[in-house]
Length: 70
Image (cartoon, rainbow, N blue to C red; front, top):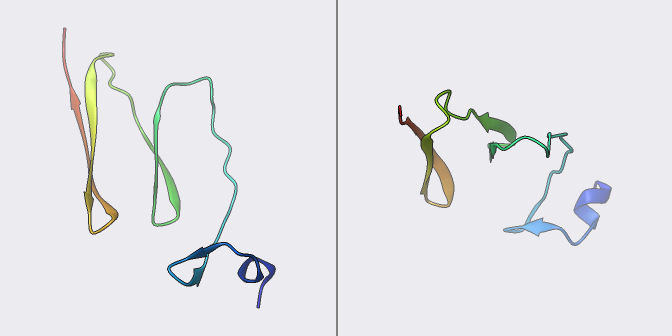
């Protein structure tokens, strides 16, 4: 059993896998972790828009990005 499994970190009875990722905290962005991968949602080129995340059964189902031209 790994050291991680021996710790008290548990998710629905399974061991929790962890890793580290560097992100730029000086840049406004939407960051999504899906299936263990980090995904950066790009901001609108026009500077105006909306980002929507849809959840289904406790998991991210879809990401919607709409843009507004002014």
